[in-house]
Structure formats: structure tokens, C-alpha cells
Length: 254
Image (tube, rainbow, N blue to C red; front, side, top):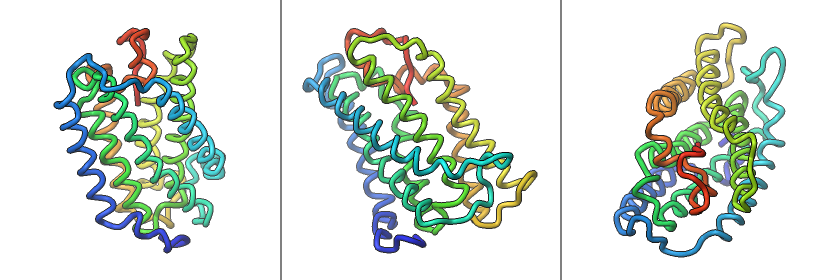
């Protein structure tokens, strides 16, 4: 990392490989060791606290990452590297470990068989690695902030929705939430295309090889979310839906 070398250990190769590998192993074992439909423990209040924590952390990141946006250069292509930019990308990277509690709650509720699938485990085990690679190479900054920003905004919407509906309140915007979740992946894919092509602004700050990483990764996400929609109800189910009161087909998770 350029501005925070003291935290370089957080994005070292062992930190990128070992935790994600252990996460996959734990997710697989946890799903197989629990009885479908039989909760391991009551996590309702824990989930509410988790939702509040996610809203706070993602709100903090949203405010810190907003400077990447501009007009007409909406994605902040070729924007300068700053200390603040790297800091908030680092926070975003660390928040990907916090997101693993989503998997824990699914397993703890005894819903792994119907909600934990390849899409869920794939996304949660790889997205942190992608951000870690950017930071480790000194490229977790500049226009790369856009991906962290749009994801942080999405998570503010998501976890506010989960918290609100956990108290059995209705959310009239829940249908729009799923569309927004999918749209974020399309926007990141478009971002990668514009960085690689240099159609509007030529990117000179970030290594083009890393733009290819974003391009390829979001092809997988767009494919899984758009053309494998049947998978989504199995795994991308909001935390409030894990409550027995919520219908299984009413919402989706990203």
C-alpha cells in the first residue's frame, strides 16, 4: 500500500488466501453439519445489531468515497490517488470479512440447504481477495474507489431494509432493491470497459491488468445474477427473510 504501509500485512498473500479458504471450508461443513429447518440458536437480536453495524460502517464508507464521483466523468476515471482514498478502500476490504456473518446467520437459522449455494459462497470468498489484490499492488485508490462506493451504498440500502423488516414493517421499495443490486454489477462492468477502452478519459493511474481483473470478475457476477436468477432465492435472501414470518419468495440478497 502506498499511504498505509504499516497495514500491508492485512493484504499479504497469506491473508488473502488462508481466511477465504477457511471460510469456504466452514461454510461447507457448517451447512452439512446442521439439520435443515432446525435452528442452531436464536440469532434474531444478534442480526439486528449486525444490521445496525453494517449500516454504520457502510454509511461511513459512502461518505468517504463520494469524492470519486464527478460529471461528466462519473466514474472518476484517472482521478488522483489520495491518502483518504486508500484508507476508505482499506476499510471496504476489511468490511468483506464482516460480511461473512451473513453466512453464519444462514447456517445458524438452519436454512443452509435452501439458501446457501455456489453464488453466495463464491461471491463472499472472492470479493475480499479482489480488493486485497488492488491494495497490495498500490492500486486501491483513484477510480477503483467507484466499486467500493457503489457497493457501500447498496449495503446501506440492503441492511436498512433488513433492519426495518425485522420488526415486521413493510418496505414498499423492496422490489426496487433487487433491481438496484443487479444494476450495481452492470455499472461496475461498464466502469471496467470504460477504463480499458479509454473512450472518454484515458486512465493513467491504475494498472490496466487490474482493470482486466475487474472486467472478468464482473462478467461472472453479471452472469450469475442475470442469467442464473433461479439461484438467487436459494442464497441471496435477506436476513429478515430468515425469520419465519417472511415469505421465502418475497426478497433476494446481494
